[in-house]
Image (cartoon, rainbow over the protein chains, first blue to last red):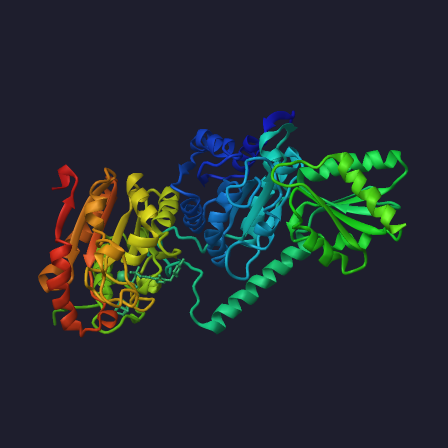
Length: 353
Length: 248
Ligand SMILES: Cc1ncc(C[n+]2csc(CCOP(=O)(O)OP(=O)(O)O)c2C)c(N)n1
Ligand code: SF4
Ligand SMILES: [Mg+2]
């Protein structure tokens, strides 16, 4: 199929529909508005339905209802709106329902700004909602990757009966790139025999629920959830390793920031400095195993983020004290430049020599 | 031998956990009977609230979904949009519906979702131990209005049915009470009408039911019924606030 040029937000919407998403519940917020707007134009054409909710709180709870009713369903928002969705996300994870949540994130805290940022790393990987739950979190670096992740997200959500988040900084939502829609690898997906579709008098009622008043029962449920998360950690970690051979410093960066990091790597190479990149594609599960492949030449790690330093916590955990871990970041919608990143690398190497 | 009373198939065999004299049980039974009589149990999805009736999902003999506190109308919207041909209802208390869930209840009506809401107003937060609700009456003592609700401090009690009747999409709005056998019969009629209107696809319907909480009111079950009659009904007048023209 020939590639087509699309804006990120619309490409994600188109990918969702290609993946069989029929329902979308959302609330306007910049910089993701083109996504719900696209869905409001397109979903009815495939026999689905778009509803603009009265708030992000309601939107995610509509998702909760639709997911429980057995539908392929999605919502999208941006940082402050995702904050409001946390209650619903926790319930959906607790009740083990599939859905896809897109965060085209912007700078914070509070109302913050509307320019690209990666300051929702904690929010998406640590959960803003209550309880021991996890989301599978994809952080694409290009529109093609955003499309691929979105299409696969629906299968993964059904497979694990768990919410899947696709997080793109504002740049992913707003830029245009050529894309194509590729069918994800086929998975054996379980029947949704738990869904609320009416008993037809033919079976016992299905109950969608996250409440367990008996502590032993709730612990059992949590142990079951953990086993599922463990399986995700084993099977769903995605990452890219780039220019790792003889790397003196290994940078860790995700999303569009990783693309800027690659420019810095090219510039440093011209100066004879070899720097590698570990690019997590899944923020959770975090690619711990990538750190086992760091070469003996590496003296330090550098986490580069469009935040004041959030992923660096996971980089430190993954490094297990084997390397000093440095940080470079810009925030509030300010974009790191390749030069500034390269200078930070030189500063680290200067200090280490 | 003629059977004069038996369990409705609209409810499961699970024994209720409600306090003695609590009218949540009566209301459950009425909803169960109506669903059975309309022959829609196999095509109904109910949404349980957070409140004393949180375990309603174990009692109604149909598919059920347990929502977060106040969010039942949003959850019900998601379900109804996926299954427009099914009967969808929410069962909510006054803390759930009139406080934390005001946005959700207003907008489910505003969108004219074809959903039925059973609203149980007992003028208090039952489950959490008797705190003041937006519906708590002036002078009524609650654990967070220990000197009695004071209008200057907490405003006047919220009249939900009157408010809902201002929304075009709320095509059926009625306030009833379960304090006497006659009123229980009227309550059942209102519940039935609300579900029939959903089946006809006319819009959103809500039945506000004045209910007792003997435990947190600190009264016996019979004293509670008297208290409801003497205090709640005068402030929350019973009656129909809205019915579609052709259904009158
Ligand atoms: C987000 C959230 N806030 C608070 C609570 C605690 N809570 C549980 S039930 C309840 C009040 C229920 O009162 P009402 O809706 O009137 O129902 P009743 O018990 O009186 O039938 C509250 C505040 C909660 N579960 N979730
Ligand atoms: S606390 Fe009140 S509302 Fe709750 S079950 Fe007991 S009597 Fe009923
Ligand atoms: Mg109450």
